Image 1 (cartoon, rainbow, N blue to C red):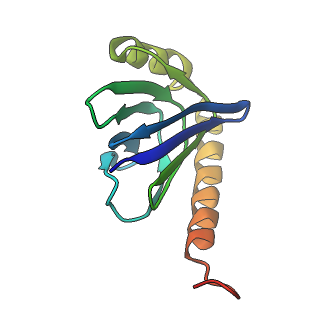
Image 2: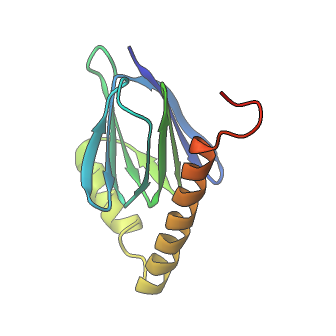
Length: 132
């Protein structure tokens, strides 16, 4: 069993692939998602997003702050910026590109992330007319 993982940037879709495991970083630490895990929404912090296929192949991305939503077999990641590459190079890329934001921008992004997470949670749990 796998999950469909899509990483979206403001400019378009960066990655669309199947994965048996997804590891990412949130404000309270790293976490792992597997296909049968419960639906999940979290704000991501700058860090490494790792995807592992059923045959063990790994894909690594350095991601900026963003939102991760797991709903059923689908994982959607929306982020300001991301770079694919080898694991050793990505930590350096993440340091250079994503962690050098000034504190004011960081606070503003964090506030927007919280608003976006709240909105996504409401949409995921909404059971309006015609919904089962």
